[in-house]
Image 1 (cartoon, rainbow, N blue to C red):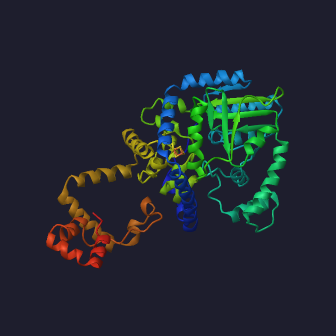
Image 2: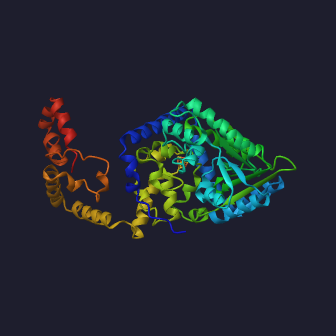
Length: 484
Ligand code: SF4
């Protein structure tokens, strides 16, 4: 399927230029990041756990075929039916076939980014099946006909007043109500009826365990458990990278996942599924590739398969926090999404590796130690190598390279640039061709270059002493002296 070209700066513009929403979103995610930090620092062996998780994932991905076959054998021995899907189309067709076999008209589904990736909801709805997302955040975005903007907090971009409006329209709550307790209770009543009438329960999978043939689903609302407890048929959709070798390995990941995701010591429900519930029930596990084998074959980007979808890299990313998840136009946004999406289609997602300041904060928080910012930098190299860099960037880089090799010319250009910025009209720098100024003002240009400032203030010890004796002058000069 041909995907549209995503231009991140353009896609981010409505969110970034809405200062109120952008700052509120930034603060909300930073709050989660701080909670994560508190939890991480409360575990003395945190770094050891990250090392272990990374090593387990490296080993599992290296031996993935073996572990998948072991998983299939053990799951089948427990009475589950294992299906293999090469891509999204095959995944959707398998799920539909199972639903048709049971004459299903309505399914209840807990949160699964894989089914988002495969476009399962619209596919089933096109085939006459009602899909009810049962995770509260997912239900909110479903009612609003939106997609999740975050892999753990799907409705993080929506304010409680907007949720109240949505519920008033769809669930009949009081107009203007925005009390979270009231709205949550309304959602609970609404979903309870849906649970009772769901004919098949669909869940994602957080971890598949080769040793036992079982799998684990982590939720905070218990909706996965309720969704599969009542129907006779449970379909679990699982990306092949979710495999881990043993139960002992699971303990490493469960200690990392919730702490990294939401700053909780553990997810409220960590549910284990081993075969169908009883003799009258069915458990189907759909193992999905959809480009994962191709990613596994790439030495540089293979570590991206270690991702346990905790969302910590999004919560910490200054670009994601300010531009919102929808600006990535991808199922998985943020730093990991900017690594994964171009591997799916480099041309369509070529702008995403540039939606990054290379600050490295994502790599610092990643519980499985994916070197995210290095991978984003590597993607930029790939894009340049494949001729996918836009002409404007290519010209800018060539010009910079030319100037950096000629110090005299560089100094002259810097001086001219500082003067030009002071005298030229605003529209010369702030226009639709300059994505850098779409949502920000340039700092006031200094009169001197950093080099000139340094020679004046640091190059001569006598001048330095006199500069140190005048703290105010020193500070003022420094704050203006970083332009070139
Ligand atoms: S890349 Fe790391 S931090 Fe980001 S979602 Fe995946 S596991 Fe979490």
